[in-house]
Image 1 (tube, rainbow, N blue to C red):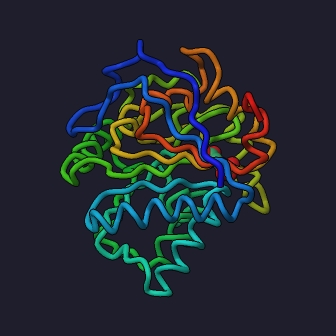
Image 2: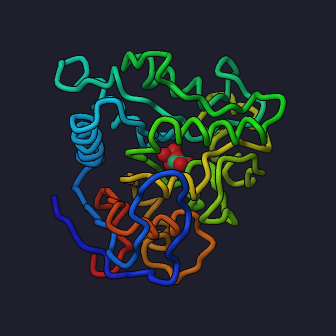
Length: 275
Ligand code: PGA
């Protein structure tokens, strides 16, 4: 494993994005960029960070992403749980996003997908899972309650995140503000296309989603962004090295400074300067 410090500092974007807990918002210190030689090593590094965090704070709140990127990470967590070397039975899991009006039984549901791929096989107790309230009658009020739920859990201790092909983080699409909170927003055509392709018969993807906000995510005490594959190399470069401000939601994660570790396989890192 090689670890490289990112050269950029973004001192003019301080005081962005927190409320309710004591995440260190000083920027300037660079995120850690960890480049590993395989998808498996990326998955293991993310699992190591979860294990380390949970061993110190067994009842803490963590987020886990959806998409194809985290599948190896989930498998590694489940393997450790089955082997008895990791215990997530007291950890609070906060979901990041869901299509508006979609419940876990719906074919395209991200929550249903997360249940099948991770929450059920990892035997996370139902009472410790916090679902994005995407079917609420009053989504705005429900989104505000979700924020309150996060605060009541002591804030997010660890946010494990993925990066969309257009730079989205959770479903914070381009145009999302770095201080945005949990809310409903319009999906880009690109994201709907991307996600429809996950399903054999191309599920119909709703036009709106509810997502945890960038500001909420930036309030986490530790953040891990996992990205794999050559197809993401250019968006990784933009997110980590593009000039700021930039309409790539992932670039706002740089505001987390040293609280952020970006774990890339060699291919995802291939467009970064010096590589
Ligand atoms: P992917 O999705 O892991 O399937 O590329 C990532 C995302 O959209 O956040």
